[in-house]
Length: 319
Image (cartoon, rainbow, N blue to C red):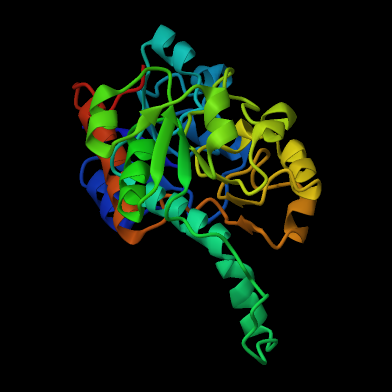
């Protein structure tokens, strides 16, 4: 019997690829760059399953051309690159990789918070550049985290994991979510706040909302106007949640103290002026970037494919 075909749009940890190759005919786009759209569409035209990444647009066109594809398995927790409604209408499975990256992404958000508060990145560069000649009472002063208010926008898996990291630092945790979470409030002494109150009262704001029509540019000029002058905003969710042009204006006008970004509005591109601010940390979308987590993500996507191509339901379906 001819093996079913799986197209993998980026090289992942070898164990996930080996697992798929035990059961299926697997082709991998080996370059560490986004697969060009024309190649993506051509390769999925005779595939039975696709293992994709957030940069791969899974829309009606892709489903028309990949008419035999039974599952698009996204190696990410976010899935704004996928037309879930269209897939559901066609009976095509789309899956993501929740849970396995929650702690890793939360750890990075926490690292960004610490890095911004204590100006770790620009102090490191200052030292590397040979400028550290004497101990100074004025250079690289930052803010303590202890005693501050940390606002969490989006108390899903990653938002809660981030709150847990914060809980050992003697901070006040406030959150805003579509629904109140009494268990979260009880376990971490977190307080529910309105969106406006969270912006007005938080010293650190960490964004963990998914990207939807409602959250696109959730943070723009009006929202920056409400924040404290010493506020630091962290984004490890999706870039378009923050209006980058508005962020640049807020930094220029000193409406806020700093920002830590792992994602961007038009990734991999971002507002060039952001590079000019010493109180901004810019990372290349490494929220899930640990050896352990990337391995687990790829394996979960591979297992979703294995289940569907063997006539069963996927482990982590979307929608």
